[in-house]
Image (tube, rainbow, N blue to C red; front, top):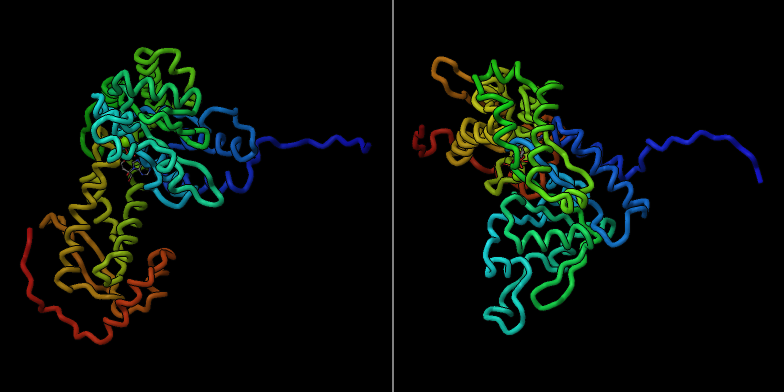
Length: 387
Ligand SMILES: Nc1ncnc2c1ncn2[C@@H]1O[C@H](COP(=O)(O)OP(=O)(O)OP(=O)(O)O)[C@@H](O)[C@H]1O
Ligand SMILES: [Mg+2]
């Protein structure tokens, strides 16, 4: 025996958990308290230390609408198995009657439509998106406060024993699942704390400071305790109340969303890969138009669609932008509209990708460059002016 006295650091996480954490922090703004428990539970699972016969983790997400609850679940699936659509989403409000429950678990043998129904929660559905490396599935129950008794019983069984019995008595095993539940409980109390929005200036000052976030959090947890039985609350590994998003968070989300628009352009089947950038004025307009403390980032996304994506689509459809273009988007305050200028032309794919922050250009879009060389430029195309 060799005697030593080494100090160990239990706060370090393994490389896979670190990768998950770093990527979630990149994709999700201002909700680190929600990211941490997911990373911890994933690390525990990787170490083989998760309790047996239960799902890997049961999470209850509360908090304002548009604050990233659903997005965090999708982002976790994106990072771990490569696609957001790996998440099986169950909107509890949709499953009130017994024929609707059949969509979840299938109907018993002999019932009308028994063979035709493919239950949403089958083992195949759970395993479908697992990869060789990551054998985890993701299940999201939205608006659980609206679940009927039948769905509620189903949910309790899954949370506690990680099993579900289908209509035809087959068993589904959830012990390799992360279960997420969301609820808008306490939303009224929470938005009362947040006050109605008073325009952009109010958004800037009413950011998620400690007391505001703390109050909202307490209101959420108290509402959940009032509504849900201790039996249910005891099965939850972690209740997370998402913070209301303030102006600094929305500013960061704006940049993330603009990156996603750029990605959509590169992946567009219309195939004219170009890059765009926004002036400070144009970004401020989007933030002003997209800030509504009651609707979170969802409002911002609508502003991006209306002020940026729609006009860009018109420019693409009328061939005013071409492969290899660099488009600058500004804002004309007097006319209250976005302005679009071609700032450079004929950039090769690698230069475009670099301008887009290293975003790769997929092969179909690359092919557009070859086509573009042989096509005459067509600024006077048949165009219809739109609003
Ligand atoms: N914290 C965040 N970080 C990054 N993006 C966010 C964040 N919050 C919201 N978004 C953006 O806003 C969109 C809407 O958010 P999300 O669907 O996650 O809202 P939610 O909290 O689930 O709201 P609801 O309670 O209405 O279901 C997301 O798809 C994402 O693009
Ligand atoms: Mg949601």
